[in-house]
Image 1 (tube, protein in one colour):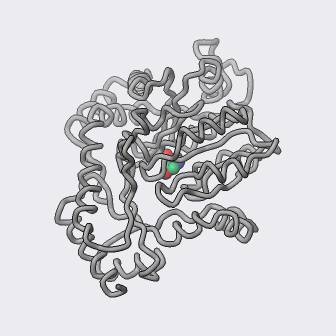
Image 2 (spheres, protein in one colour):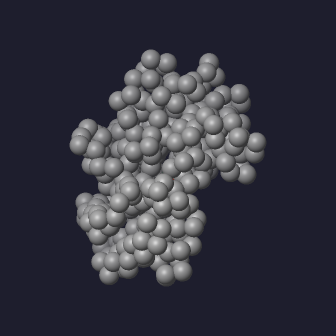
Length: 367
Ligand SMILES: Cc1ncc(COP(=O)(O)O)c(C=O)c1O
């Protein structure tokens, strides 16, 4: 929680919007357009947050009662909440032990005649095996969605996170790399899907159509121009923000490089990991669960957060744990041993040193 990185530039852009931006969507349009172009996508649709972007996309894809949508166990609940909003069923899959994203083999096992979509999540900035996922998606005729909420700036074989599948989503929550406080973006290439999402986003009105004339009862998921002004100004500094994220990650790796049996976010040969957050997976030899590790670090004054819980283990999805613990063993194991180190953009080298000192002391006691 060292803070997002807001400069005079953002303040000036917001000031302009405060003075001139109340009766137009100028910054929303600029942000949507340039953000989509950066990702090689045709269309960008800003939303009040990323959770809404996922819900909007699933609705436009026609997902509803009785359908199943596949997603990984290890993600924030927002990846799958939209599935339940639509009375469809989330189907939780196992993850890969190295990149912690969805495991294509587990996806293949979970497909049934009711499967209507597969959501893959670029967790912490890490990328899944997009080639295999795309091949499974093609072979079964099931559309793929890229939840790139945490992966702004990451690439897989030269392709940016957010360019995979029929649609992708990003979050600009105050903890993300580009922030708007709350905010999200949906990226698409298909024009019909785009038009449907634009229609669903604004009370079932046709963009440019008659005033106060609604064709369906839909959502009100319009973004706010001021929110977009912050995001647009931040986005203009994207390379600088990503460089700082990498700097944080590289400092952690370097300073903890002599400690045995710990794992960080992977850095694949053919990709770039923008590392939204540094994940630290503690080796089994330490016999230390994530909550114990965090407690011990806290006693030394160093904050850390746990990896996500397997979704199927949460009270939000009652009665799922026993079957899924057996079916998705990697997720249950990795989620029990992983912590996230502080990663906000204003973090200093001294603060990183302090956190590394705490990690070192806790693990030394268990070695
Ligand atoms: C993987 C993932 N998906 C979706 C979301 C939802 O983003 P938001 O908080 O903007 O709704 C988040 C963010 O917290 C996330 O980490």
